[in-house]
Length: 191
Image (cartoon, one colour):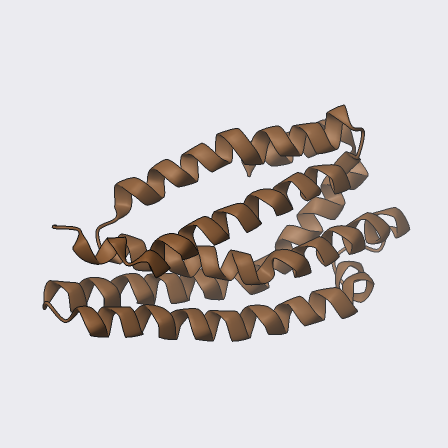
């Protein structure tokens, strides 16, 4: 996200302000997901350590259900009230306009972000750390940064184009981590 912010900052200061306002609002959604991910990491790891695999699976699914309910609620707020939410942080009309579009994109990827964050916690708890690190780094450098640059700079989409690239990245990462969790491959890892 540091490189992502630098790309947006080179495009426009108003776009950067809108992006930063959106990130502040998004912390309302992703910080609880991080907490649920940590809880899932702990429970999955504890149950795997005590050889209670079915309990580890249930813990993972429970965390995901809670995360999805919360993410869907936040997505609805982002989709219905983007202008009001952005204006609570920045009163510039152009920042509100750009930020509203970005916040609606954030509404689109909330479910996938929740799936990705919580699934990665479950996978880490099971000891599937090398896989999650490899996928995370690969997607960040081969999807996130290039798509943000292409959308924002090459296609002249500004902050909105950069966030369109970020949206593709977040959706792809969330689906990939979720499919890995659902596959059950993590249950066979020897720690």
